[in-house]
Structures are given as structure tokens and as C-alpha cells.
Amino acid sequence: MTTVTTLGQFIIEKQADFPYAKGELSRLLRDIGIAAKIVNREVNKAGLVDILGDNGTTNIQGEGQKKLDVYADEQFISALRSGGECCVVASEEHGDCIFIHSEISKNAKYIVCIDPLDGSSNIDVNVSVGTIFSIYRRTTTEGPVQLKEVLQQGVCQVAAGYVVYGSSAMLVYTTGKGVNGFTLDPSIGEFCLSHPNMQIPRNGVIYSINEGNYIKFPQGVKDYIKYCQVEDQITQRPFISRYVGSMVADIHRNLIKGGIFLYPTTSSHPKGKLRLMYECNPLAFIVEQAGGKATDGYCRILGIQPESLHQRTPIFIGSTEMVEKVEEFIRLSS
Ligand code: AHM
Ligand code: MG
Image (cartoon, rainbow, N blue to C red):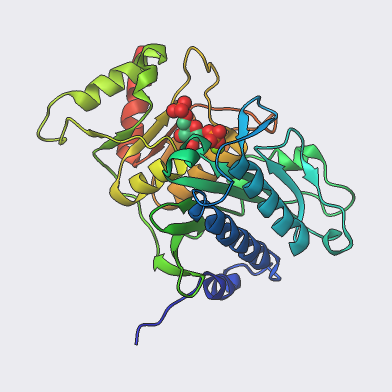
């Protein structure tokens, strides 16, 4: 008989790794796992019910919201609200933090930053989308939470994870002691440990970038792309280009196979497009924990001091040797 470890069992077993933990972080992770299952159910039947398409609203960043963006946002916030362990949520879909004031949350210690449904442009065409989350502890113990407690560097994350709603749904997370992946078994409705101790290969042959923006890239990035395309037997070039347009799916593939994901500054996004707090930091934490690297071209993503909730950053993330190579091209061109 094969034994199955469910996400819930695994989280409880791992609680012993944290001497200070009283089960709150475990409960928080479990709540996120439950909301992920609900969102997955809706993503799966998206073509059958009236949940595809635009919601007719825009989020704080002026981006059109899809119905599933709004649905996923509501599900995660409601799970965090009723779980009682989270005192504040920062979501891609809201301009300001959502402070949770309720009797059960009055001693809550955890701050959650979340992109409830990443890769929204793929929703209507049945291509993988994801959820990305990042968890911090409050830096003070008393009084109402301050915005500066939310704006912590990525190195302060106590946990981070993503869910990819793909050919199967997977939840991958870290609490700073390695990375573990769980695949949803629909027959029992549980995320089951399928990818223990995930390690990203030190080097790879896949590069993921929206090459349509080539003309808008900095010279160092253009030079790196050309390097990827030149024939060379020793380094197995030309490399393979793969770009889903859902960062979670692109990074998940590269985490397993080895590769690099790049979203540099462009002339139209001079500070980069992707958001530090709920896209880049959590994925950087996971990739570093799996043995990879994540930088903005010069500095470690996890070392950036956030100044605002929706701050953007360029990002180069994946197999260590590939990230170091692009950094070398950027240095040489500046
Ligand atoms: P979203 O959070 O609004 O969906 O945007 C983030 C997504 C990433 O998942 C993806 O890598 C990127 O935006 C794609 O952007 P582009 O279409 O510019 O390549
Ligand atoms: Mg996103």
C-alpha cells in the first residue's frame, strides 16, 4: 500500500521545526490551501459557468479585472479573515492594505501579501494561471498594524508559496527549510506530497521572456538573448525559449527542469512590470530555497527595501548559473 502525505499532515509534522510556533502559521497555510481548492474548482469549470471574461472593473493599477480575478481575491481574503491568524492582507487587487478587525483576529501575528490570480490574460483561453503568496510576522506585538510592518524586505518572509492551476493543480511552498510541492488529488480532494525537497538544477537550457518587447530591453538583456540563441555545443546552445505569460507556470517549469525567467525594465515599464511584494519576493524565496537565484540584475530581490505596496521591480530568476550569466551581460553593458 502506498502511503500518502496530505498537505495538512505535512504542515503539522513540520510545525516542530519552529520552536516558537504555536500552530498559527500551520493554520494559516492550511487556510490558504483550502481557498486554493475552491479557486481551483472554479478555474476548472470556467468554460461551463458564467465566470469567464472581464468583470467590467479595474484594479488600483488601472488593469482590467477578470471575473476570476475578483472571485479568487474574495476567496483568499475570506479564508484569511475567518481563519483568525492574519491581521492584514495586501492584495494585487486592492490599492490599500485590508486590515482585519475581528474578535478572533485580535492577536493575529501574520501579514499576507497575495496575487490571488496571476496570469489573468490566460484565463479565457484555458492556459495555466496561478496564485502567489508571501507571509510575514508582525514586527511589533502591540497596537494596530502599521503599513511599515507590511513593507518588510523579502528576507523577512516566514513562508511563501504558489499554486499553479494547470493540467493538475499544485501547491508549492517554503517556510525557509527547503521547498515542497503537493499535487491536488481530485479523487480525495487533498493536496498530496508529490515533489518533496524540490531542487532547481544549477544550470539549464530554457529561457523565458516576452521577446516581443526585445526592442524595449536594456542593452545587457538584448546581449544575453543573443547569447542564448548562438550555437555552442558545450553549453547546449541555442537554448529553448518557453514563455507561457503566467509567471507562476513559467517559474514552476524552470524550477523542475532548470531555466531562467526574465522580466527586465523596458522603455514602457522603466521600473519593471512585476510587483515586488506579492509576485517577485515569494517566488524569489522559493527559488533561493530550491538552490537558485533571483536578482533585479544587480542586487538580490530579497534584499530590496520596499517603499510601497505595489512597487515594481525587474527580475531575473532561476538556475544560479543562468542568472549569473545575465548579470554579467548587464554589468558589461553599463
Ligand atoms: P497579472 O498579475 O496582472 O496577471 O500580471 C502578471 C503577469 C505574469 O504572470 C506574467 O509573467 C506577466 O504578467 C506577463 O506579462 P507580459 O504580457 O507583459 O509578458
Ligand atoms: Mg500577477
